[in-house]
Length: 139
Image (tube, one colour):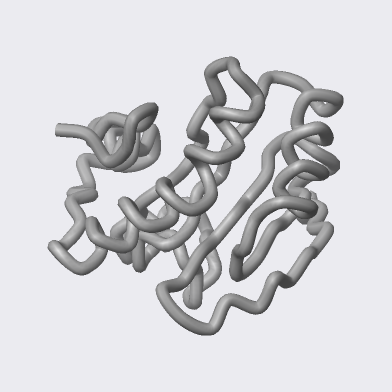
């Protein structure tokens, strides 16, 4: 089963933390519909433009998985509306980020952990086109 042309179902629901802890990470029909929408509106256009594979770091997270990875309680990942991705380097991620900022409609586009990955979210309605720069907290 596929979420989109370049994202398999297993890639969209895979979580190292879930596997490590034996947590279930299966979306509902509504969450799966959201996953297909963000893939269609955000991931596939940038993938076509980039012309090379883009790694999915995190897509869907069940509430249990989200808590295990210390995700925000209001994370769009829990609703299947967000994808964290990387093209392999900060420089390549910057190309993706700038193209997405200029060419896509999104709810949030986040430059995370000094460019280690990009977070993009999309909602069926009410997208804010909010751009953020977040650094990971070091314990």
